[in-house]
Length: 131
Image 1: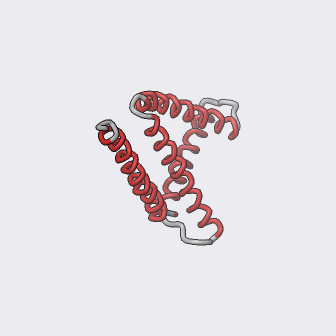
Image 2: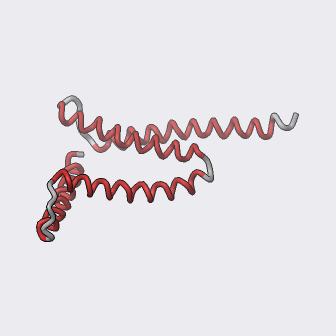
């Protein structure tokens, strides 16, 4: 897990240095906070436009699909936060497997929930309508 975070930090630092060099090359009058404002703002709006287009298509199927995607995304942030907290405080081990197992637990429990929902739907559709 620490190795993965190290790689991510290396890539982000490399991009930061590259953008800083571009700013110096073009002699732009911006500080570090301005760069964060524009870069994160730009990434955010591109991500929003992409996500909005995808979610509009998904919403045609069922709003539960969007709920699942949102929940899964929040869980990803949560489990990464938990593992980072363990590394910072030294309480527990920061391991990538913990993240995978935690997310897999959600997928399996959600699958049981989905199975139950399908069974209820089928019972309502076929058994109750037969009466």
